[in-house]
Image (cartoon, rainbow, N blue to C red; front, side, top):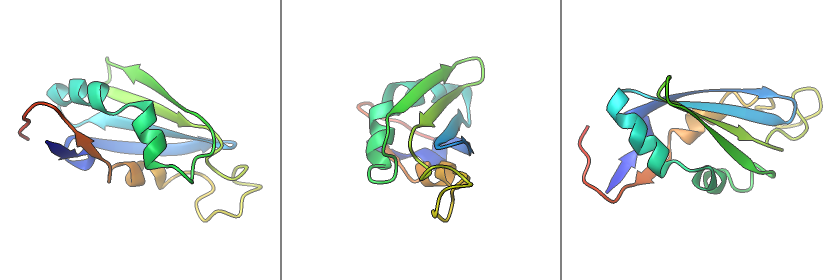
Length: 109
């Protein structure tokens, strides 16, 4: 089954130098285990392949029902050095919400 990430989560993103930070927050407590199981660092790296040139790290924040991803070498050197349109990474959260999770079990919203 495919679930659009935007249907079960919202996101915030920003930057620190050449690394982007994307927080993905479950819309309901029961959605957090789905995020943990299916939204891996590897899948996020694949989603941003060609844009993110370094590794992607994932941090779990169960008390917030959130995952935090750090995307290294994502901003072309950062806000003061990059020629990228979004050198601060503000739109990366919205871009990640277009991701579709592939789940093994049935799921209803």
